[in-house]
Length: 162
Image (cartoon, rainbow, N blue to C red; front, top):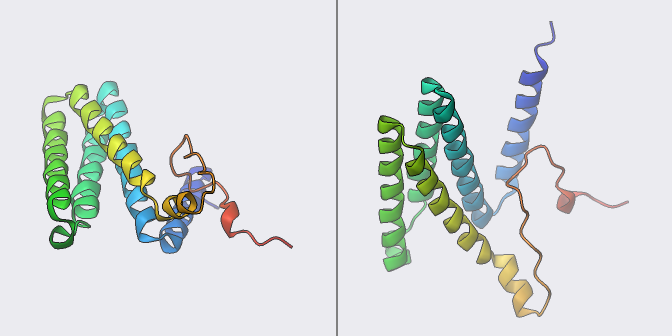
């Protein structure tokens, strides 16, 4: 009659993600793309190890889509110069590795892509605009969260104190 608890939680998470995307600056959007790709690759690894072929394929397809249609498409090769060209080549390499991992059921290839994405995400987070401003003003930098984006976690920075 009212639907399952799982579908309600999924809908709540979707709203949380959509709200996060709508409120995010361009830098945060890239971080969210990295997080989505990391989750998809980790999911693909779990499904591959469990022998769940269809779910593995769907997770790898999602990771490739995020890399190609999100991260790679966001590159401005005219402005970004050599760095953008190198990132483009790296994103292409990761997509190819994911395809090969899917074809040959190779967890090490998934692990390689996961490590590359994780390193790029860390580097991207280290150049966050607010981190640079805080450092320029001599303010201590906040530690990055140990976990990824949680759409169900409250965002205290947007709460209004009474």
